[in-house]
Image: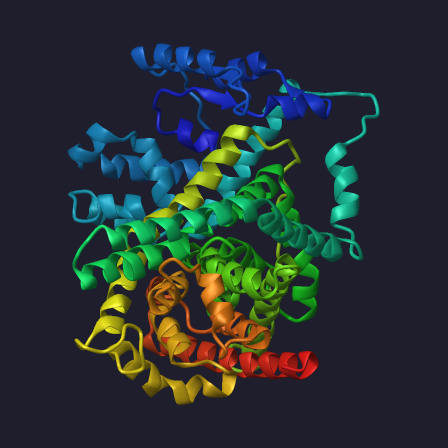
Length: 564
């Protein structure tokens, strides 16, 4: 990359980052000799501690105030150099390009088949001659030969600048990897870390969540008592504060989980998790690359689905997109925390762990089904570079945690707010009916859907909440908070007091919320990435079917075992 950027002829400074890790491994780069070889200033840096950053800025200012002082080029061999010269000569007629870019760089990019450069040339005065030259040569062969020459150039520079310790050193990353990526221990360690993360989420987050819960209940009481209008009091107490409060009460748990995931990611472990999962995926005939989007899906399915772009094979990419929505994203977490914390207070972490594992299992099982039926293909190889382990930095970890957690807050202030207000309106009208009763608009809609979910043990209130979950999964909790009109009573207390709800029903509801159709944003991305309404509709229908069947099985088995 450095050689390719240098061909642009622009002022350059190279930051030689992570030199601390190189030192720890007994390796190093003689940056002064490398700088002399390239003709480019090089500054050793350690991004996590700020070492060398001031020197890097000083060097950048000096170079920016001067003119490019490097003449770094690669000799691509006589055959390719002739083609470069011919293209450069043809491009001289395009004065706009000549004024903006080095002719040699443009010629090299044309030989590499760079679409952006081709677009710049297209329609210009040089286009005719350029097309004529390119049509007479094998650009694929030229591109391969140029890549070889670049690596030859690198190979001539490295021996004189690389410093390697002659003594035997213990590599900590290799020692840890020998355990966490072991073919027998790797998956149990991954599962144990996941279980620990969820246990920590409930154990540490419980007191903070309880404080927010008590605060929102008190705030709802004050707000309802501060206005004379009954409808306005209901909107404030039951609708806005009751609905949003039901969602925001889980904010501490969500931030704690994101903090744990950020630590695992920054330490370098999550890359190992992808490597560990490659073996069972390969045994099932599935691409190892599919697990990277699944890991991203723990945060949000939208970027996870988009991450499938990195998979070259079309069928592999499509089965990854269709399977990914079953991976439990953070939007489903409030549903788990509410129901698991209410009905399984002593084992809430284990229940959430079960749901995450179930989501991964269904995603992998679905991908295997698609591979065996509608999306056949050969297993593509999975190659990835393992980043070295290092201690997570406080700054990076907190930024990552806040970035993910703030998305939840923004949703609460926009999509979820709008959703709970709509649910309140449906629960309040027509005038004269009891709030949240079967005679309200919400009750009418719920009773229309109730026959579909009644075999799962769900009543009309749950049906309405699940309908609004199509917009965003967090609204399921907000809708329940609004429909139950908790007021001074907390939502968990209201759920426990409902005779229609049991531990088995709660477990079935969590399974259904995990697996049923993706949210509206995820469906939009599926439509964009697949370019097909057919596959988008298939994702909805398949997700609803799988969710209904597994929720039915889990709910009835749990009811039988627990005697409910």
